[in-house]
Image 1 (spheres, rainbow, N blue to C red):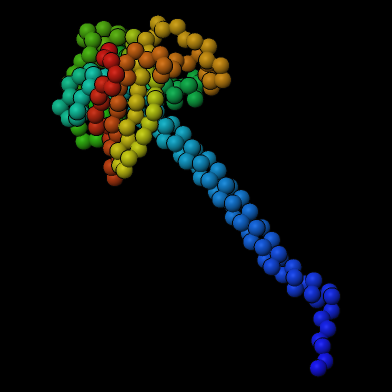
Image 2: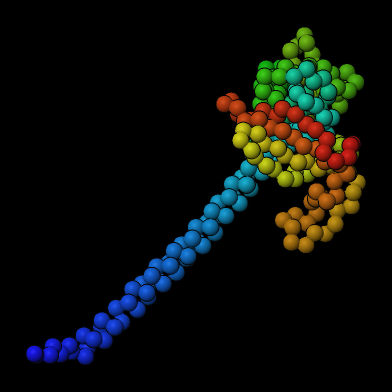
Length: 244
């Protein structure tokens, strides 16, 4: 019987065939682990950016009312507190102030009275109110002493509001946006109120070391926003901790 002689090189190749497959699987596993790590990092960055974008949008949307330090309410419908109509008036005044600042030398588009107050058409006030509170009906009324330079005066006969020019708001508190969460079509935003005379600590590493922080808040509220087909609607404000 003739013995088959297998070349030594062929025997070596056969002996290491399993090792080659093992190496392949190790490399594949390493690649998958690397790809998973990159995916998680990218997803985390995207999620963080989306959260920052949401917080910026919420800040812009709520700021007109945050400045007014509103009292809690379960619905904007039927509300007669000054803060709600003031937030709509401030929204218009802020937009006009920004327009004038972007175009130095221009004059306001609104008529002015003898005290320099702007005459805002009720149609614009109603639109600004709807942009914040949806279909809730605004309570038009004069805030302050009628016929004075600092009054927010409602004129039924002229169908307008007379408001002091500019967007300055004098308040005992400075609003600070805290945590923002979204669940389904409902957004909940925490707002802290820091006393305006509260000394501001030097917060190392902060984007603005002189800005007030949530840690300084004298009290906090929760603002609830509902997402609708027509846009966001502020539906309620509740006290979270402490009261103004």
